[in-house]
Amino acid sequence: MTLALLLAVPALVAPASPEPAAILLAAPESPVETLFRQGRDLRYAQRWYQAAQAYRSLIREFPGSSRVPDARYWLASSLEQDQRWDEAAEAYTEFLAKHPDQRLLGKEARLNRVRCWGVRQWDSPGAQAGLAGALSDDREEVRIAAALQLAKRRDGRAVPVLQAGLRADASSEACRLALQAMGVQPQAAGPAQGRFLVIRVKERAKAEALTVRLTLGLARAVGGYLSDEQLRQARRKGVDLERLMDQAINSPKGTELFSLDDGKSTVTVTVE
Image 1 (cartoon, helix red, strand yellow):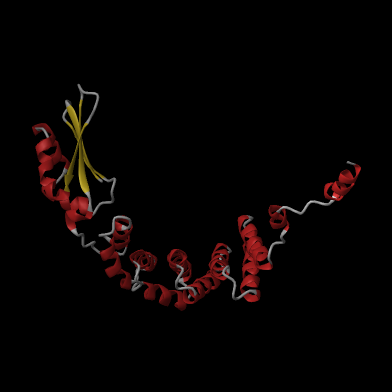
Image 2: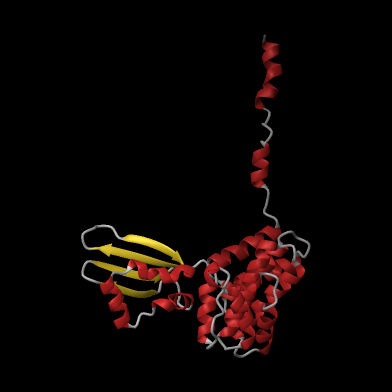
């Protein structure tokens, strides 16, 4: 019995082997991850200049790292946030040239570069040339963004892209307003643009208003919702019911075209 106990003692007092998880937790951070984390933390702290330096160090010291594409993008973004517009535009260009496979960040880089060029277009021929080149980008949103920037200088090269942008739901209003600011008549695509006339009829005796949506092609039908007194009011106010479609096409969404009240009900027509 005593011998068995003596033989068991070494097993009882031998140090336990470390768990694999403990080894992993103790592993030091790689230099490339340290630099990438530093750049991220500096960006979060809005220390843009220092963040850019961290990303530059990563790109220079570890050119083969998988972190390099992200580092190039965030370098450009940090320069943009630091309002170093020319450097930022160049950094975005370098990112796009060296990492064409980065589709999501590539789209953001193109749009951000357009914004940088837009700030500098009054003072930099290179920025003007960049915006002009972006008018033929293969992404519609980039073409429109460049045209909207050029429109601020009333650059006629923007007009064809802005006219085409009227057909894009996300940018139609911005393109329309830009064309009008340039003194150019928007060439609307008509009812297919997704605009409606919204007629709201609120009768005095009823709590809820009646809401009717008409495509622009049916704009003349608005008169059918007006009483005789409201029609007379419309004529006195100069409301041209025959030209409602044209007015709606050339007005920003949310515009109230007219409101008429005959004492029994109020009819309001807006563009939506």
